Image 1 (spheres, rainbow over the protein chains, first blue to last red):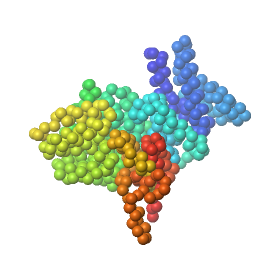
Image 2 (cartoon, rainbow over the protein chains, first blue to last red):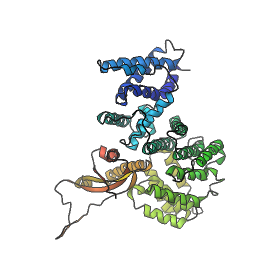
Image 3 (tube, chains in turn green, purple):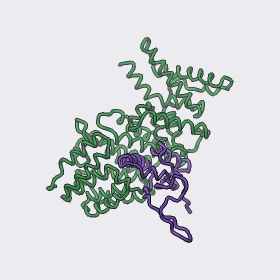
Amino acid sequence: MNPNSSLDHLYKKLFAKMVGGLVKSIGIKNISLAEDAVQETFLAAQQQWVKSPPDNPQAWLFKVCKNIALKLIKEDSPHNNIEDAFHLPSHPDHKEEESALNMLLACAHPRFSPKQQVIFALRYAAGFKVDQIAKILLSQPETITKTLQRIKGLIKSEKLELFATHRVVTTETKNILLNILYLMFSEGYKTSSGKSILNTILCEDALVFTQTIIRNSDLSTPEARALYALMLFNLSRFEARFTVDGDLIDLEHQDRTRWNGDMIKVATHSLYESKTNQLSKYHIEGTIAFLHCTASSFEQTDWSKIVSLYEQLHLINGSPFIQLNLAIAKFYSGNTEEAVLLMKELGTNIFIYNYHLYHVAMGKMLNSKNERPKAIQHYEKAIKLTSHLPEKKYIQNLMENTSYSS
Amino acid sequence: MRKFMLLIREDLRLLEQMTQEQSEADIQKMVGWVEEITQSGNFVQGDPLENGMTLVTKNEIISDGPFIEAKEAISGYTIIKAESLTQASEIAASCPLVQAGQIKMEVRPILEF
């Protein structure tokens, strides 16, 4: 194997665990120092492994990282008692998983905005590099760097204790944790283009973290199980969303035999296990995904049930964007007039009116009512509003296929 | 989570001088932000406001605003849900138009009984 590609692989696998292990000993306020130590370690590996690759690369990394960290701590505060630093992990051990989970818990602080939490988690719990995060979030590397600096600044200036020993994980923190994983997964899912491996890795990372939480008796909740089910239902369709050329295929036209039946089974089981009196948005979204994944065809889908689920979701988490989904479900359940009426009402909201999926849905509805010219206007607006190329192409295709006979 | 109102303030005179392309580009930035905070479960509702206004007092109704001496006035509002005032402020700070210095947001907790 090419030493650099295997090193990239190790970086992704170990970065969060190494930083997490270090900050556990030296405090989250020293996260920059921990990060520097890990970066220097990988730089050293890059230079030295070409000449003499180690027998046990992971052990090498942990050992060198400990030495570099000790050196940096001494430089940083020569008079500091560094006794704690002797507890630095000098070899990979079974606590690695815990370190990564700890970093995830650290970013679930209610002081940070959800976006900051996600960026922090992508960097320090999942180990993505800054330019990779920028690619995933369709942002600029400078913006990501700025956000990370702002978070580190907050940790320092407010002396946030993100790793208090024996911290009781509150319900609030558990909810934030799940929201971070939900957002990580969604980011990976929505911007994937069929060719980008980065998105697949991100979705899998989110799934693995959710699994870790379910298995952890202090953190596991019915909501976590429902989220796990939701992720698996979506992942079961991951590949089927694209043609071999990477073009988008919508739910209606996906080849259902390409959906991963095993994943759907595991997801269904997890959803069943998530039963609780208080339904969360993950339960409802998970149930909607279940209805889609287990329907024999698009037409056979239980759309009226989906309508009532979106109505419930709107009660829990009301926003015009959920109402948009509600309108779409009404349309497919055969309630075209009611759907269009709701859509017209939604269209008076400036944010919905400038959201490309609103116009895609409106185009489809009007086309089915044989109002072709109006449908085309909406498709044209939708194309203008999205910058995601596979989506542009998909809408273009819809537009070319409008007809009076639909 | 609690509800917060973000009062958007900006220079209305500059707003009036904007070309259609400029204001469309700004709307796009706002939509991207709203989409983002909807997905994270924070967005409740929001609207921009038109420029026309009146000021109603005990004795009269004055039209032809803006009435304040300062250049800035409220140009829109957003209601969000957040864990705390500090988190609400970080969410407001993540708005691209705030970051570009085009608008300011006053973040106010909504009084709940």
